[in-house]
Image (cartoon, rainbow, N blue to C red; front, side):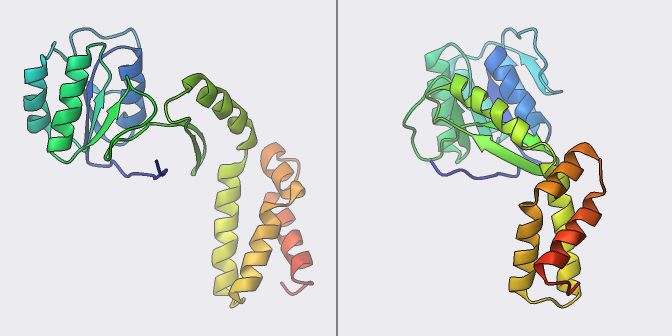
Length: 215
C-alpha cells in the first residue's frame, strides 16, 4: 500500500460500529469531514462531534445507508462480519474507499489503512504496520512525537526563508543549501524548542555562514 494524504473536506465518512474502534475512527475524520456513525450502542468515548445514529443495520440495510449518504469513505468497525462485508461490498459498488477495521494484512484495491499519526503544527508523520500490529504503531508514534517537537515552527520558519530568498533573487541551489543548513542546525532547533534565543536570528546566522556572508 502506498501512503497518501487525502483531503476529506466537504466529504462524508460513514462508520458502522460505535465501539472504541469506531469512536477512534470517527474522531480522526470528524476534524475535516462530516462523519456519521451507525450503531445500536455507543461506547463511552468521544466521537469528535460526529453524528451518531442509534440503529442496528442488517447486511441488507447497509447498502441503503451507503446509497443515502454517498460517502467518500466507509469504515466497517462492527463485531458482525456479515455487516462488515456488506459495508465493504456497498462501498466498492459506489466507488468509495473502504476501511475494514476487523482485518489486517493484504487488502483489495480501494482499501485504506488509517495510520497512527504524530503532529506538530503543519507537520504530520504517519506510521502504519499494515494492520499487523497496532501496538507497535502506537509505540512508534509515541517515539516520533518527541522528535517532532518544534517541527511545525521549523516548517513555518523555513517556509518564510524560502520565500524571502527567492524574492531576493538567490539561485535555486543556494536557496536549497541555505534552507537545508537551517533545518539541520542544532542551534535553530534548540531556539525553537526552548525559546532561549531567537530562532530567526539563529537561522539568519546559519544562512550567512552558508552563503559566505552574502546575505
